[in-house]
View 1 (cartoon, rainbow, N blue to C red):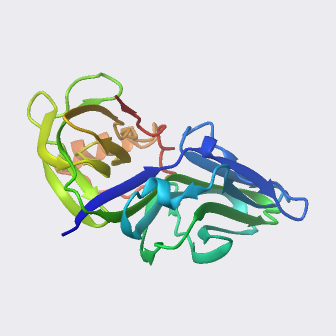
View 2 (view 1 turned 180 degrees about the vertical axis):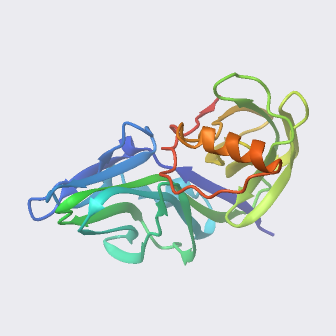
Length: 294
């Protein structure tokens, strides 16, 4: 009989080195969203063509100490920001096993907001020795303006099997507002292995939730709460008990433009009713990513 063990890893920019191609600039660690985000900035004719490579390739037999080793999913959050006109851009995520490409996809970018790219892999890596995870970006001739591409929170998940049942643990999670440190009630918390939700539930008034009898391994912790940015990051589960505090980032509320305030007030006074309006605006730039504190 064999037992499934979950594996997950969230990569930081410090795990990579970057290289520009054809004399052009490469992606670089993003100071706005460190330490998980790469930024590629093209401006006024300055093109980008480069790739981030893992400094230390993943040793599959070491990180998955069992049999039937498989990669399940890879995900990355992507955002595009720009001003002016001209140019083209693209970014991609690549997996290289023992020197051979086994997966590559272009990314979909949110326009001034994050978009999650989640790809199903189901790649057998039983005989793979070394694995490289690569992030690349290309921005071509933004002559009439500028383009920024962000690639953040790269998470790779997998599974393997062992003959001895893995020990279990209790996970205690506390969710707080990053700015006020006050607990977040009714936040949805899920513990995920690949595409499987292992355990989930909602926090209490103290921002706490616990999961019992969770097999030892690495999982993805996902948190969603109204008024806050979604959170997702790998965690390690070790018996007997592990505790995590997650600081979720409030979504900023953009106030009405100053010139619209008297218009709205005047319309309400004259019409005595509600006002429905549409404003074309640039969304607020996201805050830095949240970080799990152990």
